[in-house]
Image (cartoon, rainbow, N blue to C red):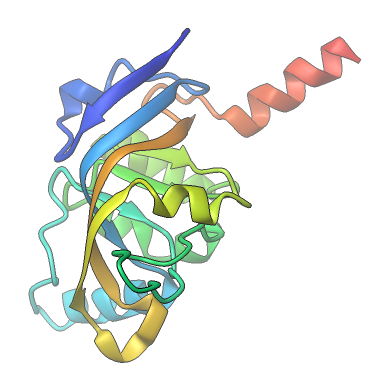
Length: 186
């Protein structure tokens, strides 16, 4: 698809169903940040029958541990973290209505199956662009697990946050498709 697709959170199933791997998107609205330590705590909360710090229904989690903000900025550099570290926990949130995840790197078969079954898309953010991605953040506040420092869960308000669809609802996988495409071209 040419051009970018504009998405606004919270995401509905109808909004993500037409997306295909390789599509470029600009996301506006709220993103929640969480890395592996926060995911482990959310899994423990669910096991204990406790409420999560936010309702995952329709939401997007950005796998990031941002650097401290400079004066006058809502957040410091905020580049994507390797998503596979969240693979043991992601299906728990996807089953509860999570509609999107942003990170870098491949996802496990179990995560991709949960995404197709429950309706969730995995977006990739370009590593090495942490300062540029932070410019898309208009507001940032710690929501939970402040003791985790950069890995605390934050609520970010973003405008035109750039990402690419890596795994779609139809089994598309940009990592596999890209490898095949380049193998033929070489």
